[in-house]
Amino acid sequence: MVFKRLHYAWIVVLVTFLALLTSSGVRTAPSVIIKPLEDEFGWTRASISLAVAVSLFAFGFGAPLGGSLIDRFGPRRVMVGGMALIAVGLFPLQNLTDLWQLHLFWGLVVGVGTGAVAGALGATVALRWFNRYRGLVVGLFGAASATGQLIFVPSLISLVSTSGWRSAILVLSAASAVAFVAALFFMRNRPQDAGLEPIGQATAASAQVDSRFTPLRQAIRTRDFWLLAFSFFVCGYTTNGLIGTHLLPHTLEHGFVETDIAAALGIMGVMNIFGTLASGWLSERFDNRKLLATYYGFRAMSLAALPFILEMQGMFIFSIIYGLDWVATVPPTINLTAQRFGRGSLGTLYGWIFCSHMIGAGIASYAGGFFRDMLGDYHLIFVSAAIMGIIAVGLSLSISSPKRLRALAQNPA
Image (tube, rainbow, N blue to C red; front, side):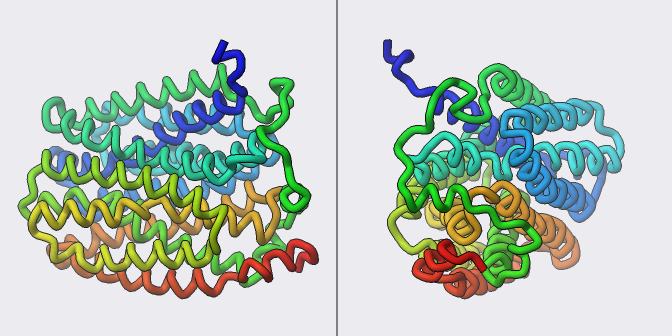
């Protein structure tokens, strides 16, 4: 009886959450397998990091591709295709022998697949299925990446230490196949496909934002587009590219124990879930520019402190502070994009802004490995990330104010 009363939107949310969680779990793998690959094949940290960077770049450019395809064909086909690509890219890695295979299958195939799934997919689902709870649902989808980290990283660390890195790839392949099947059978493009209406009534203001469409060629001529893109570039540089790829190798090289770091990453994941859900709630109530500036400011401070953390107590504190705003930047960035340019073009425009995020991540991934090989540690790259976090504070506060965004909605530039 309860199931019959359940709006199908929540089934779509569950399927989308599973796809985003799995995609996030796949993206965590490099930090866990870098050292095993070095030990088995003798590859340098920079060469492995380059494969991760290629994947992050492909991930980034997969986002606008996925966003355009979502606008044209709907989220169901993109989710099914993206999960299929992830699975197809992971399976051959079981027999990895040469570096070019890592660049091709992990770098390009998995990169494009995860980018198509992670880019504008969650934002589009929230837009189509919800007039009420949108911010919360966007926050929930952002938390999916945190949950993926929480579930997969400690499990993969344990699995790699007991059964080898190939077992970790096998588990990720199986998880991708499960998400593919769920998307194939249960995902729907819009409420009308299930004979339903979105949850909640649309207000006149939200309906105006929902119907407004800004072409990419027009958006890129605006200052706000580039402020959003460059601030999200910093977000990628300071999260997926640097911490997501190099935190675990950094800590192991400074005397930390794998089981302790797994616990710290678990705490980071829990804080990430809380922070992203809270950010979704806050983004509906406060100035999104100030939220972004606050998140980037705290991130900069935590990254500046990271090179000096040599004990687990400090690492746990870092995990709490850093974890709270890992993905917290996503809801306000999506909101600002929609408010400025209209939700009708959100898939395409947020896809390109997300691409900027992953370009930053790819640069940080390779730069981290390069400077570690050259200098023997990651200290310089952590300091660079802290400086970029401060720059992002200024970029965020320079985005058009809520009053101006409302004026632009009435009379688009």
